[in-house]
Length: 208
Image 1: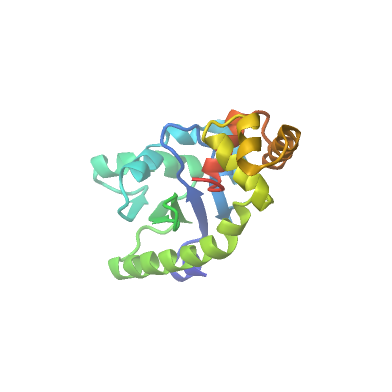
Image 2 (image 1 turned 60 degrees about the vertical axis):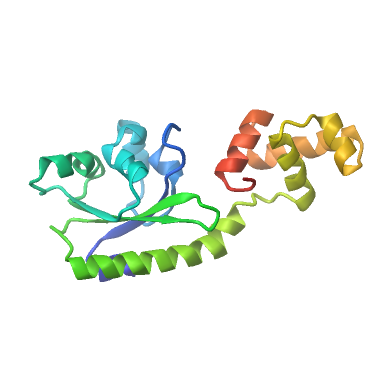
């Protein structure tokens, strides 16, 4: 509704993550209404990590608008590579963040030439408000990945570098029980080792 009201055709909510991490458009978009197959085709042909627009979003929290028809080369260079790759003439970017500090950006895609300043300011405010609701009632719930409170506690101790025997002493259960919980956590997070487990848990905001 926000996208259409501002004259855009599509929207997306992109998790920025860490700048040095490999990035796929398909996995970084936590919500979008882009045409089916578009993100997969983008990832087959391009590397989101190399996109100048993504680099600019990591470097600044100021809302911005990128147009394929921009005349200022210094400005257009930051965004027109992505516009050409994704197949739209205009993208409006509204940086937002969750209550735990994870950075996202709400993107609006269209084939219009520009967006006026008043409309842009209103779009930014409404995007921040809508994202806050979306995070609290959708993303924060999804971030738990189905882990129980005990599994989350064990995961937190693993992230601190504790061994299974050390965690067993801390939480007053057997080492066998800790290993069983660890195997369950690996399965729920769909990872193969403790390093990947901790990395994904941090990325998904299960632990800090």
